[in-house]
Image (cartoon, rainbow, N blue to C red; front, top):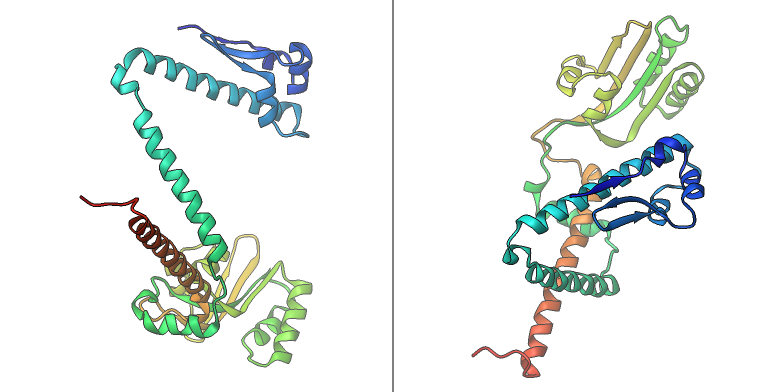
Length: 281
């Protein structure tokens, strides 16, 4: 089995150089009687890419193309006539693809994607078994700051407040002095999000939280990582509606979509029966 890969990539640093060398649309690789042309390479190499990166990407594409061709050749040689006959599979795929495309067209023209808050609350109430936490979720404020910062104590005093004015003062101090300051006051987050800030697993994070909701660690670079957890919902308890509201909307829309598809199938079968196209003997 003949495989020819011309080593133009090693000689020229970019696809444009290859193009200049090979002419308007010359072959850059050949496997048996099949050739890969420069125009096909041009389609996969983005404009503006550095010469080294473009050469690397072009080389990867050539090798992938060659691999496909040699596999095709060996399959043609080794498979029996019946094994090489894929007409049935192709027809099944064509029918499936056409059905899917029409379903999408039908659904896109009719699907109502508006979901009211009342619908979300009702779905949540009707399906309590679907909304049980596998991991804790929480609301928190997180601070990373130099351990010797003169404002660390002031921020710490204000971070745990429920008073909007005092929290604003904490925000102002933190934003001007901290390496990082992030608040999740208004939304629930997976405990893993906060654990990531401390570079530890969530079980260790929760184990290190004191009874007042504080988590504090110091690293070898002289930084203090500090978090105040204002609310927490433990694993095994109901998922807060605020946390799963977006997922519920997706579930409601998905249910509507499936209902449209089911009704389409019924209507098409009914029409076919009425018109004599569908008959069961």
